[in-house]
Length: 427
Ligand SMILES: [Mg+2]
Image (cartoon, rainbow, N blue to C red):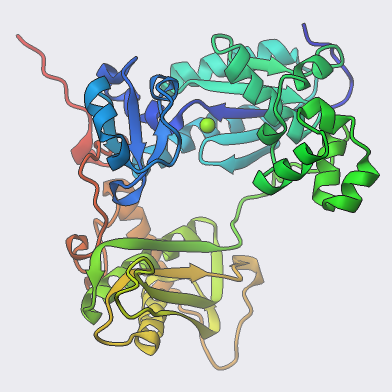
């Protein structure tokens, strides 16, 4: 079906209904049952099974608004279990990386790869890869292929819509225009609500319309980014594959509290837990920081209460990455911005300006925290083997006082020995 051209093609592998699919791996009774996963604090729907999509329940809707539907259709409701989703994602990405030299991990459930049709029959490779991921992890994926990232994204959208069983769609010379006609302009990667409105006012409704639009007109009346979208729709690559994308430039950890919090010591627990988690993420990408940000904010929806939001940056004389040092700095920042007697709703820690270990500069006046770094890496090893927070700093306290509501949490089947799946066998 696909024409083979000497040029490289780009494929995107995207997990179907990822969070719901993860819940189903260890809980087969969920198969074919309408299932949703909720955001932090069990607030809104952030993942829906196909059955739920067919009921017309939109993404992002607060769960209390659809309580009646939950009862009528016996919808299965789960809190988000990110330790499970993160681990399953890691396994899927490993399968993809094992066979492909250039991979961009685009999100928790999506990866771009390049495929050279000269060395591979693209269509059968994609079908095999899809089967392998399903067999090895239990997660169904869809694969879209095109000459550019934008076309690959569209092909993926079409694979889900038009070929749900096969799960693969390749845009080639022959079928591209016909298929682009069936894609709405708002379903194109990078075209948001504002751009959609503008394009429709100017008679551009489908992906094919935008492909045929005058690129100079688009650049003049929209942005250079939109011009790139037009080029990409025409098969001219403008958005590169970021395959050396190993490290994030910013690491941010934050949570809203279940209840408002006024106590400094509880805020210290929360801030130091965020700092510890951020430090751990920093070390997995071999990063160091020379400053960090801390912020607190009150509940902006409670206009009957005094409002306050504050952010502070704490600088270090020398780049660090150990948990003790990062917690200490975060607490120092918290003390500087904390005002007593306010009701806080949220706090967070942000690591900015992350540098790689080989960019760390030595200092004449401060020695590197070798002992602390060694301790942190030992803690990482233990927590990796026995579960998150097996070892932690006392100031992190117990999360009951501040952590989020997760009443319908499934087990950490793959990352915690105590949560392994157990099966009862009758003798
Ligand atoms: Mg997905």
